[in-house]
Length: 148
Image 1 (cartoon, rainbow, N blue to C red):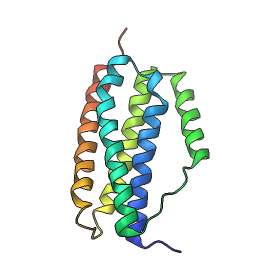
Image 2: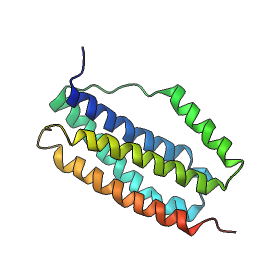
Image 3: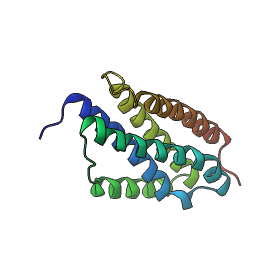
Image 4: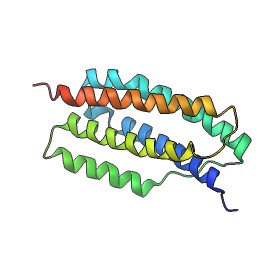
C-alpha cells in the first residue's frame, strides 16, 4: 500500500525524531558529563512525544512503524568517529546534534503543511518548540567550547 503525502510527512518527522534520539544515545559517552546532563531532558521529552505521535499515527493515519535504517546509522556513527580524530569529541557531537535538529525542523515544517488530526497538533507544536529550545541550548554549549 502506498502512503499519501500526509503519511509520508508524518513518517519523515517520526524518522527524524528517532534518528536524533538514537544519535544522542549512541554518543552519550563522548559528551562531557555536564553536557550530557544539560541535553538529556530535551531528548527524554522528545522520546515521549515521539511515542505519543507513533500511537496517534497508527490510530488516525493508519501509519505502521518502520524498521530502522541500520546501514545509515552505522555510517553516521563511523563518520562522526572519524571527525573526532581532527576535532574536540564533544564539539563534534554537538555539531552533529545541531545537524539532526535541522533535519527534524525540515521534516516538521513539511508536516505542518498538511491537515492533521486535532489530537496531533499540540504534540507537533511542542516538538517544534522543543527543537527550537534544543537548538538554542546546543548553540550555547557550542559557544562555551571545550573545557581543558
